[in-house]
Image 1 (cartoon, rainbow, N blue to C red):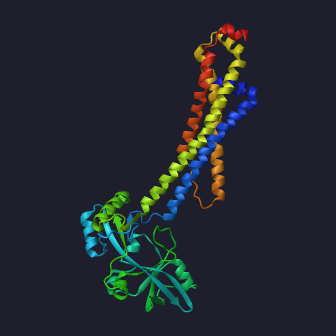
Image 2: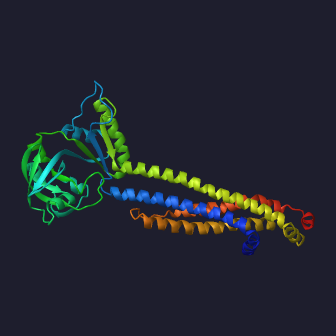
Image 3: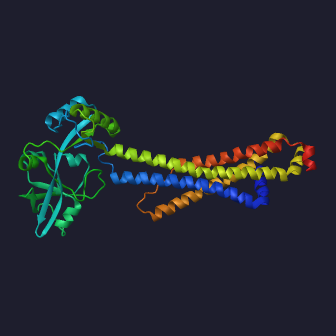
Amino acid sequence: MLEDFIDSLRNFSRSKTRTFLSLLGVIIGVASVIIITSIGSSSSKQIQNQFGSSGLDLVSVSSGGWMRRNRDAVTLKFDESLRTDLFDSIRNIKKVWYKNSTSFSVSYGETTVTSNATAIEPGYLEMYQLELDTGSYFTVTDDVAGSQKMIIGSEVASSLFPDGNAVGKGVLVVCSKVPFAFTVAGVLKEQSSGMESTTTGIYIPRGFYAKKITPNPNADTIMVQATDSSYCSQLVTDLTSYMTEKSGTEGSVSITSMQTMIDQVKSVMSTLSLMLSGIAAISLLVGGIGIMNIMIVTVTERKQEIGIRKALGASPFAICRQFLVESASITLLGGILGILLGIALSLAIEYVATELPYAIKISACLISFVFSVFVGIFFGLSPAMKASKLDPVEALAG
């Protein structure tokens, strides 16, 4: 087998141009598959990093869906009775969090920042794995007492307190033209957090919102926490059916899940990568056709050599094997060079596009390499069979 491989390299040197073009087609095909799958994997990884790992077990339910309610539709109220009913009606729910949103104008000295404020229940930020740079989280006492405390994002903190030391400082808050005095209880670390903002967000106890802004409010948004992130897709389906049944119309609320969004994006990226890889694989087929043409010409040019080998006792299988090794050697070499080129170009792309995390799919390298060798064997089979069936006398006559 090794001798056949060495002979193949010697024989292909006779037709350098044809061999080089076929080899180039294989290299480009393999390298293209690796680059495309690498970019797809890197993009998926970047999306995952942007969302972060927190909040993957949450499903958001917000009032005001995409479908206008019909006359018979029931307006859903996100009150405590609904929270209880959710636990009774839907499985795999760990906890249900209620929150409300309002606009805050926060002032300290001569600086004013306007941002969206979220009224949350105690433990919400901890559940979301949002870490504090300084300060402390809200307690149950803060919620029950309606304490006028706030936890702010890093950008809000740097705007109001450029010298730092925001915790414990008093700020003036204006909400719906009503002024309130608040104390900064904590500052969030800047981190990937999915649907929550750790930079421009302002968080207050929902107890304060219920006492001073809107007495006994219904929630604007429900955050349903699954017992495990693997149940999120089913939870979205169950909540959609539940809300449709309760309201009497489809699309009465907006239901989203970070995990399902990530899964959808990954699915789209995988499909796109597969389609582009298929297009790139055409280069391999073109290279294979070129190899078949080379082998047909080679068999014609080497008839006398084949005749001599047969006259000396070489079996048809030995002749066939020789030419198969010759055709496979091109794609074998092309596959190796294509993998090296694909990895090198992928590294270059990641170096230029620094926001993309580097990710090479080993499976893509192996599959493209095996496919390239298969192409060489497949397209070399017909010329090899033709060579093995040559009559020794006719072959020696040329």
